[in-house]
Image (cartoon, rainbow, N blue to C red):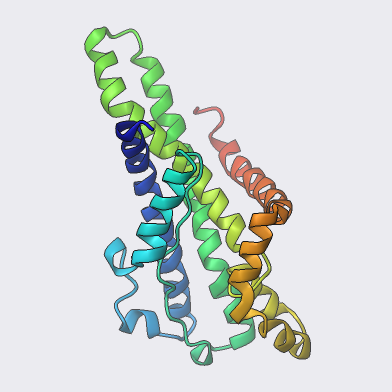
Length: 235
């Protein structure tokens, strides 16, 4: 195994992941705060400082282990969930769906922003391509890692948005489904929450999760492409 190459790739992936999971959690807390629940704000979780959201196992150890075991082909992580007291929300059933959707929506926004910046940087690199050896050296040492980070930022944000929209609690998609179902069915479905992560892991290990995620990813990619259409002439 190329230790240096693995560490370099891990560093490139770490920054987009920290941004993605931090903004995801802050979005949940910020929207909850606007809808009547100040829990996250009172606990200091409406912070863009990643240290406020890092979980040692899910944010640090798990991504590193997955990255090393997959030889840099797969990495996944999560932050400490932002606390939300749904009883404080103005309209708990409706607002809980909005709060849950805020995280994936933020990741979609980050994917759009990352792709937009990626295209601009790539165009700048192309324009400076004939500026000599010094320019090529700067491009290889600075611009190339930045492009890799932006590329990973696009793909990871799309993936994490799609993953969280799987309709199994406690994932965001599961909480949205609970909010939309009739009360009796919502209660029955919510009882899956203690086992939700195990269900997701089984789906993932058997490959069934991909059947759910791929269509969601495809739809998100379509949305991202739609938002970039107005900038087509500029790019």
